[in-house]
Amino acid sequence: MEKKDIDWGNLGFSYIQTDQRYVSNYKDGAWDEGVMTTDGNVVINECAGVLQYSQSCFEGLKAYTTEDGRIVTFRPDLNAERMEQSAVRLQMPVFPKERFLEAVDKVVAANAAYVPPYGSGATLYLRPYMFGSDAVIGVKPADEYQFRLFATPVGPYFKGGAKPITIRVCDYDRAAPHGTGHIKAGLNYAMSLYAITEAHAQGFDENMYLDAATRTKVEETGGANFLFVTKDNKVVTPKSNSILPSITRRSLMVVAREYLGLEAEEREVYFDEVKDFAECGLCGTAAVISPVGKIVDHGKEICLPSGMEKMGPVTRKLYDTLTGIQMGRIQAPEGWIREIKIG
Image (cartoon, rainbow, N blue to C red; front, side, top):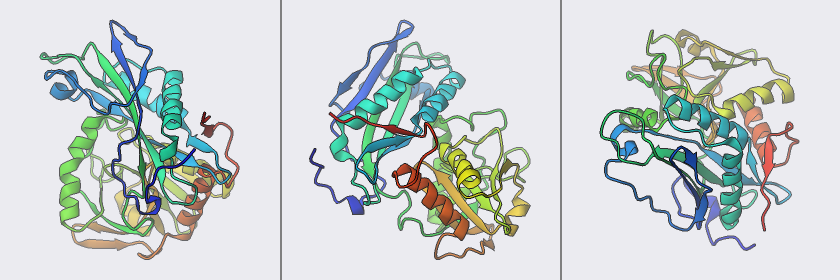
């Protein structure tokens, strides 16, 4: 198989249309068989549920070329389960887990020429999503839905790769208690756009959102979970019912405990504690871990001891171990790697 003529090493995190994508429609209480198509356009009614009441959810995962040349995905079963939880919360029909995994396999195989080569620093990003597709004028769930899955080759999420970034404490709330912060709904991300644009205009890379109820506890950013390291090398991640259960974060906690022998805990993290941590990172599918060098709280700077030039030592070990598992350099736990059969 000949790869596409792409400058893999200089890819940004942006959309490049690939050859094929998967589409399935829900109508009269059932999903159809689904098809692969070369058409990247979505045609829907002007009154479609997604356009009127934002009834949509999505996922994000990646396909990798391993050191020995295989093409694999990383824990796609958890993406399928999380999308099921999102659908249930938004009164949408569940797209079955096995069909989700089959769609992932088909889209990666059909676009194998776009999977970046091993060592390039790039990956094939996969975007499954679902939306209400029939006309809805009253406030209610749609009756018809479409599930789609496309792929696009991407480079690092943050420009400059793993260089530590600067974030600010945000005055806006990302999600409310008992709201939709724990699911991957499109509406959550729409709510974060004003805040992230404002942060960028002020020279920051991201926002730190605090809990909406008390504004004393760390939640997440607009698109990633936080991970902290204490001065005695304990890994800590915030626990809340209004943050997204990141698959990357959950995997890193296993890596910390079982591969690096570190103590790791998920608990409420109060903002007052942040100044005492040795390292901080943002973790998610897109960036894996982006180290944080500085957190600015309304002009007051919290500088992490790991510095602004490179990842802290524990964060680096976590990053190297997880990416080593994803790329096939390190033996993965049972069930974490799904190989894609090509041809």
